[in-house]
Amino acid sequence: MNGPILEIRELRAGYGPRTVLENISMALLAGEWFVLLGPNGCGKSTLLDCVVSRLRPSGGEIRIAGHSLRQAPFAAKQQLGYACAPDVLPGLLTARQCLEVHAAAKGQSVIGEDLLTLAEELRFTPYLEAFVDTLSLGTRQKLAVILALVGDPLLIVLDEAFNGLDPASALILKRHLRARIERRGAGLLLATHSLDIVEHYADRAAVLIDGRLKYVWPKEELQRLRSAHGDFEAALAAAISET
Amino acid sequence: MAPRLAAAKMMLVNRRSRAGVRPTSAVLLSAGALTALFWLEATVVPPLNWLRLHAVFCAGVAAVASAILIARRRAIKRAEFARSWLAAVPVSISTARFESLLIETLPALAAIGLLTIACGSYALVLLFAKRDEIFAPVAVWATLSGGIALGVLGSFLVPQPKPVDLPPGSRYVPHQKSRRGANIRRSLSGLGSWPIRQAFAWAQPKIVARAIVPILVMMPLGTMADTAMVVIGMSGIGGALLLVWSGVISASRLARRWLAPLPVQSGEVIRAFLLPACAVIIAASAIEALLLVVLNVSYRTAAAVGAWTAVLGCVTVGGGLTWTWIVRQNPKPRTQA
Image 1 (cartoon, rainbow over the protein chains, first blue to last red):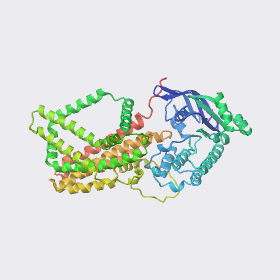
Image 2: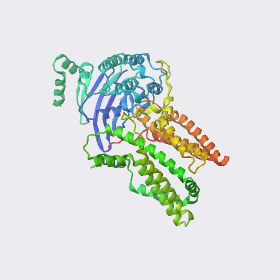
Image 3: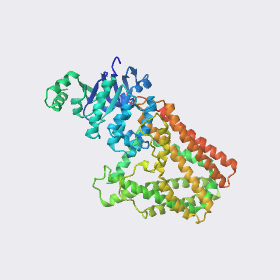
Image 4: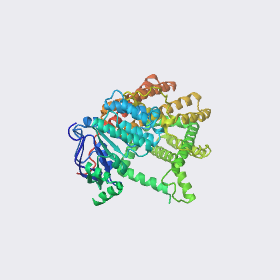
């Protein structure tokens, strides 16, 4: 598609009288993996909550695939895939029923072959008939990510989605997401503390401090950091401290 | 210092300040209830007399119910406390015992408190109305409170389960594993079954079944067997209706959080929740009407009560769903601009 997959303009949001996000503006392009970094409590999850319309911002605008989240929420959400926290998943539904509900919401008659293949690769298929409250944290995390990918969305939003996954599953998922956003021309917005993802998968990264986007590393700068063969973690930390 | 009680008090205060509950509303509510008592004074007398007539049976049921509930609560609270953030806080043995006892028996104490307020208010109303039945509420209070207190003591005789982790709610949900392969088709029907499963998870049929056995044993104590069976049936129906209603409200609120990022129409979700819940409520209301007929209530009255229960249940469930999915769907921004 032409234009950014996600466009945030002068976003302001918070809880009660406390403002958490102030004047956030950013754009996510097609085929881009964007990583949101920042210390605990800086507003990463609040920003994602605004993007997935779990929190209504007090100012600014969010557009997903050209649709305003405020004026055309249905069309915007049609292009959105969000992996919720494992504890939000309904404990008394089976994994299959969760997938059926997501498919119905996205208007998909059946779940796509590629997603079933991913479920097989993540060794999730045996748990399809199990109640969600009997699944382990990692298995619920897998379900949350699979649910986010139902309907092949243009914008994928993940909040610490690799927490609790075993290394093999995490690797399979990272490779799948990379291939998916390239094939589909989708955009991926990930909030995380894992710098290895920035090092190996991110196209751009940004650091959020005290509710403001302090610094955005463009693709070229991340590549320069990678090719320097130095300590990527130290280089990023230095860049953050400079901001 | 009793850390668990202090934490519980702080949570209560925080919750109350967040919900914006004011003491004046509680006072107004109490005044309203008292006025209603004056208004309905004559209609309350027959059920009160029935309770007094079957005092031993009622006390027995209250004792068995409180013994089972408190024993279960004790097991749950002890398992929860073992994993609690306060588990490692140093507390003297006497304080720990006192706060455990208070936390575990809280529902029984609350029930006795509510009974005291209700029966005391009604006794005052009868006193002002100069009625002869002034001792009826006192007798009912003494019988039921005594039963509850005996049940609390009896709960210590109920054997405690092994110290294992709390089972997931789905353990108590009847579920037939299907072999439908990997093919997954779209459907919102899962949402409809959620409140019914929630009701099963809360009720835990195994415990209900065990509770009925001692109640059956209580039957010869002054109450006819058929009356006791019907009363048990009515209580079961009432409990099931309450659980399904609470299940719908609870599940719809959780679903709202889960489905917020999805392009789903509120009407579709409400329909998915409402139809199975209403089917259960109507079926339960029909059984309730049948049981009333067995209790020698006229067909007309039984049908009216059943119909009212069904209508009230369906309307309140529909109202709750509408509130959750339409009124609260687009809340005002939470930050001051």
